[in-house]
Image (cartoon, rainbow, N blue to C red; front, side):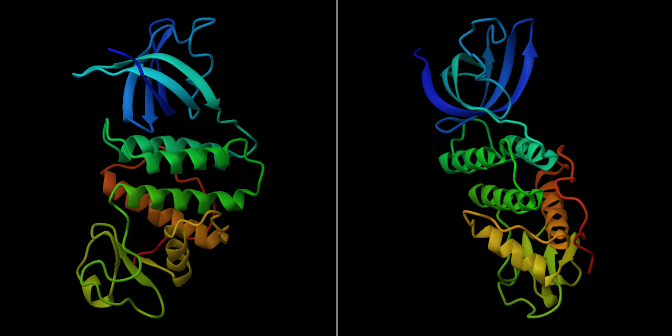
Length: 256
């Protein structure tokens, strides 16, 4: 069987024996896979830094037709994730990897998902800008991932009756119903928080996927972070491992 070439983001790497590694990759052409890289940590191996966490590499992989690990034979580094002075940016990079792992099935290629992740990692790598811009960038990434995987929240109308939303005050957001609710449909629902007008407006803007997501005021960033973290936890059935310290301060979404 011939090895196949693809671009891949390294989302996990676990030592295997003394010199090898089991690597989790998200590939543009093949989707998510796990592969054994024999001798990955030997001097003058065929991997040469191409398996660093969050790096993007051109890899050669022998894909198994039945269960078990694929075999990685080569990895040529394309771009390395560089740790700068921003903890928020580093946490953001780890968040990208965790979302790729959690929201995708094995061997289900989604090139657009790869492109969004790759572009976000390139922006976060070696971050030297204002940390206030990081929360908006990560929320835009989350909303893009959710849309591409069929889980995007409804934000412009009632997720239940498809009617209009309140024109003033706070708006109900139902974790189990996948988005905003009108006042009538909100009654009796569980897992509901309320969003301020500013937070809902920010989510709508970020969901449109602006090329340069806006920096959010601290209180809005905190509320957006809170609702996105809770929504993802409900969707996945577990909290994400990357802590909710991607933003600090601000106010979380509150119970109506």
